[in-house]
Image (tube, rainbow, N blue to C red; front, top):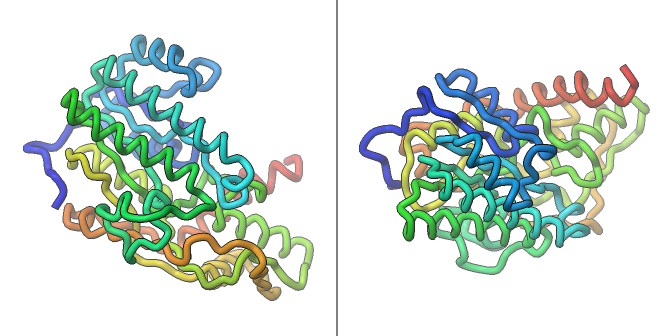
Length: 323
């Protein structure tokens, strides 16, 4: 059972910084925090590049947040991780080390750092429990990102141990939703499928190609559910272990592709390119610790895909048509 504080951490009246507010998770956190009685703080890269220590320290010293969500990261799918490994390890290490250290110096009351389910070994027992961390080799296709995120988790533990900082970490599963990245060169599987299915439908294509065999199993969590879980943990968790955030259910990539094309209305054939990498055979989080606290996801996958596609039509597809 994870550590429960003697009393919940209150966000009421607090200055709360969402680092990475323009991203998918950060923007969902901003939406969620608007229902809290707190003062939201955000900063753009033109004011503070989180990869630059002096800029982060200066901004935090001036803004004086009391609670921090570290949602800023350089992220991407298999292709992006494979072709830009130096960016993935440098950017994420720099962001984490700069924000965590500056938060301690600025006497931030509480900090939550977001990790990723790819921190767990490639062949970790399924579903993956929190204690699987560092128990085996990582998946090579995303090891650069994973190593950086593991370092962030260990930093939170170290600062908790040495300085008594109430710094915690959470490990969301595969997320999707509004403000996702739909660029096929750097996106994850679900937004990539939405973009490809939309294009195939508009073009009247007879088929849609999907990378890999279609057999790997993945878990997907709607990003607004994830944001709700992160706020819940900020209030109700205080301990050194990272806490898994997910649905506790997974499906095959084939089933995911079928769900996407059905929601979008593409009636063509799915073709799987088995020459492309599959990645980890299965990634399912054990969410028993979070469930024991009383939090569970609310949005079903089909509903979440429809909401995400609606956002894509309004914000990405319309922009590409020059509307």
